[in-house]
Image (tube, rainbow, N blue to C red; front, side, top):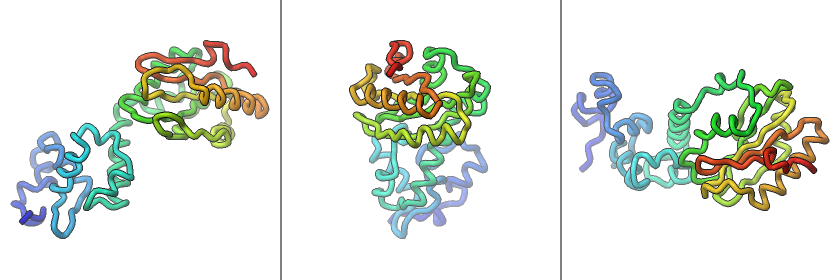
Length: 230
């Protein structure tokens, strides 16, 4: 029969071990169990943590987990799934430059944008679509992830892109997204979308300054390829 956490020797419980020895002393499953907090009637939280890690084929694969996978796991409901996803996102952001650091950043070319944002797409298995909103001096006002799609296609809605542009009083927009295949060559969908965004941007007086596709340590820029003309 599995011991519940409260039935364990107090000094061996994850929370107590963290307090006494520091977080570095904890195993991956112990760290995960602290975030998940509680188990079920017949399964303690450490066992639930171990089961999740095994199901994902390793602790490092937590970075790619989603809500649907989590809530299928016994002992993890929607609340725990949300808390865990928030903790994972917090961890990711600690290794990416702070958005506050980017607010005074000035983007003058695609190469700088690529090198400054490529960490966003490390080990990402589906397409993520971000917009970088710039002021009249091409300084960053905000960077926001607006759409998350499948490996093959992102479902991008122009109204969301330009709604954020109005909310931030942006003078221009740079769109960036990744190709999980590693090949940044634009697809037909990418080309059609970009043409549509350029047309809408010209009408709204908020131009699309560039659309950059990120691949494996390389990129494609619609601006550099002179493909932003209607």
